[in-house]
Structures are given as structure tokens and as C-alpha cells.
Length: 524
Ligand SMILES: Cc1ncc(C[n+]2csc(CCOP(=O)(O)OP(=O)(O)O)c2C)c(N)n1
Ligand SMILES: [Mg+2]
Image 1 (cartoon, rainbow, N blue to C red):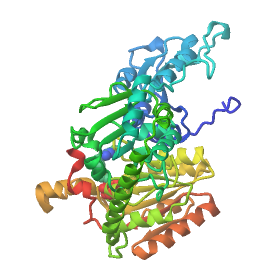
Image 2: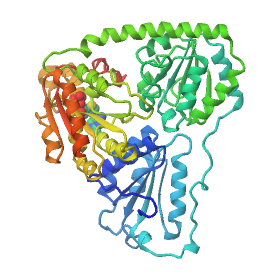
Image 3: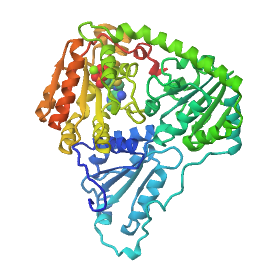
Image 4: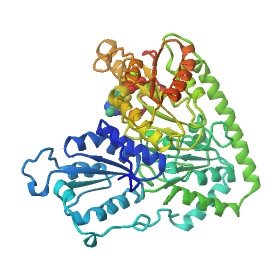
């Protein structure tokens, strides 16, 4: 395998393997691959594959199966994998003969990149895998030769239409979703914002496309902008729960949607114009078309619109500052979020894996470069962090990797921190520890009252720093807000010195919740 340029990263838990394959795809833009055994190996990987499915991340899951000669006889670890995986993949098949393995891998990979990206599953029974066949009997697709480019711009007339809309807009706003990053359309996205002077908003994996402080980067005024805009362009993100299913956007605004998937455009609400294709290719073509048409009067109007939004951004930040700088005890989770953002380097890949503490961190943490924000995406799966961290560090050994966990999340997959250490891929784990599944606790308390609300969501007080020490790394407990920054620095230095992952376990106030949790917006 090594001779063929394939590196095997053997993890402890298959869920982590699947999240790592997903994380690798997100970090490299290439196909991630996870290989599991049959039965429980496959079921353990399900959450990772499902996460990749909802996040449109291209991964290939290859799974084992008992021999075809024992088909349905009750062999060890036998399950109907192909049927199980079908609803959470774009392609799910069993390979029935050894001659077909390579060809079917190419089919699975082609599906991963067809339209919106996503996972494929391929089951290979044991005797199919073990049999030797002569190479002359086999179709072996060549890398780079087995599929077409996916950089389609859709209907060129619609590209012209969108260019017209944008050069004539006075109050436009563009929201870039995760497809813009996963399809690597970030350069075109940025060029369009700058070329036409349009405010940009970013969600999911597209956070960090522009650095904080950039003239075209906005992040606290999306509702305001959408309320007052004349043209809104939504790129590579569906009208799902994160967008209130599109219901919050007025019917009077000109609404344009660009997506890799035909099925996503116009779903849940009507649009004025829809374009299907590769986000970067489309945005690049739109800028080209618009460049010939620019109207400087309208550009001036757009610059004033941006200035107004910048004012509103400043006010929104000022309103949050008392929470960000709170030195209350126990520590306010908003303070942790602020300190994490202060701590980030230009090259830190930031991963959020948890409930409320992580939701809160999104209010302060601003990744400094494209690809340096990772979250579970629309499936909202807790436990993604360890696999993401492992993959991110392996894909970019020169970068720093920081995963911010809830204590509930950390408990789910943390044991593969040992795998990260074993493969010289150390990362910094920071835990916002409220000894509870707090995001869930809030809803229960508000529905059923204190007494009945605290059921099924309280966790023990665990000094997780010892976990890092057990694995030969650095660990620290933090109970004082002013100790957060120094503790993070010590952990950073220790990782550099020891090559082992570190844990900074920050005890946060369990009485504090994220605004979204209080409004229960995730269910609306
Ligand atoms: C695998 C999985 N199980 C359950 C949930 C539902 N859930 C969402 S947030 C949350 C609480 C998470 O607790 P923690 O990681 O400690 O973060 P906190 O909310 O306490 O800050 C739960 C159980 C989920 N999203 N994913
Ligand atoms: Mg918690």
C-alpha cells in the first residue's frame, strides 16, 4: 500500500475512521476513504458516513462481508450492509466478482463527485477480495481518466442574468455555504465580492474564506442585510433549518440560488433565479460577465451599503463585549469563546464538536484562512472532533489543530486521541466542561421545570486533563477566566515539545446557554 502512495491510519473506533475520512476530504478536496470490517464495523461507521452525507463530503466507505459462498447462511458479522447504507450514501453496492473491484471503485468515486458531493459505500465479500485474477481480465480505470470535470457553469444565459442583477444592485448580499469551500470555489467567491463590492456572509465550512477585518467580510449582520437587501445570492447551502427553511427571507427581494445539486435549488421556497453547477466556475463566469457592465453609480451605492453594515457589525460586537470579557466565576462560556479567538494563529484549523459551548464559540471564533473551520454540518453529530482533528493534522502537519469540545462530545470519541499521538498528529483539545449535555438540558428545564428537567442530561465532573496525561501529553484544569489564555499557551508549547496532544479542561458555568438554544431556533 505504501509503495502505491496509500497510507493506512488504523484507528480504534470505526466512527472516528469515518469522520477522519470526511475530515480528510474537507481538508484536501480529495476523496477520503474509510475501510471497515463487516457488521459492527459498518454500523460503528454509520454516524460518520451519515455526517458526510448531510455535509456533502466525498468519501468512499469500503466494507467487508462474509464470503459469497456463505451468502445468507448466518456467517460471522453478516448484515445487509448495502441496504443499510443506501439511504445515507449516493451509491451503495456489493462487488460480486474480483474482476469488477477496480471498476466498481471508479463507479463509486464518480458518484461521490456527481452534483453535490457525498459518500459512497462498497461492500466486498471475503472470497471476492481473496481470489486472484489475471490483470488482463480486469477493467482498471486510470486516475484522472475515469470521470469528467465537474466544473460546469450551468446555463450561460443565467450567468448573464445574474451579472446584470449584481451590477445593478444597490444593496446586495451574498451568503456562501459549505459547497463553496468543498468544491474549492473560494478564490472566485472572494474575487466576486471584491470586484463588485458586495458584502459577503459565510456559514459552515465557508467560514474563514475571508479573514476577519477584511472589508468584504461580514458576520454579525446577516438578518439585517437580508431584511434590507435588494438582491440576495445564496451559494452552496440549502434552505434548511439553519436558514429557517428560507421563510425569513422576504418574497419581495430578488433571491438567487446557486447549488451543485439541482434538487436543492428552489427547495422549500421560491427563488427569482436558480443556477446549477460548480459554485466557483459559476461565480468566476459571473464576474467575467459583470466586469464589462459595471455602473460606477451603483458601485458607490454598494460601498455606502457596506459602510452601513460595518457600523451595525461594530455595534453588534460592542453589545457582546461584556460577555466576551466577563471574569465571572464559574467561567462564562462566552469568555472561553473570546479567549479561543484571541489564541488562534493564522494557521490554526478550528474544529467545533459539542453542544452549547460550541454554538457559543461561533459568536467569537473567526478562522483566519479558508478551510480552517470545521463543524459537523447539518447532521449536528457530536463526536466528529477527534476524527476531524486527526485528519486535519495528517493532511496539514505544518498547521496547528485545535478542537473545542463539549464534555459530552469529548466522552464520545476521545480515545482516538491515542491514534493521533501514535501517528505524530498531535492536536490541542479544549473542553468547555459544564458536566452536562447542556444544550438538551435547557430545553428540558424550560419545558418541564428544574426538577423534571435535569433528567438524562447530567454528567459527572471529569478532570479530563488527566486523560491527556494518561496518553503522555500535557493536561491542565482551568477554573479562573484569567487563566484561560496562559493555560492555552502552555498547552501549545507542550504539544510542540512533546509531540503529544494536550487537553485544557475549562470548567464553565452550567447556567449559561447559547441564544439559539434559548430561542430553540434549531427546532423552528
Ligand atoms: C451523537 C449525538 N447524540 C446526541 C445529540 C443531541 N445533542 C445535541 S447537543 C447535546 C449536548 C452536548 O453536550 P456537550 O457536548 O457537553 O455540550 P454542551 O451543550 O453541554 O455545551 C446533545 C446530546 C447529537 N447532536 N449527536
Ligand atoms: Mg456539556
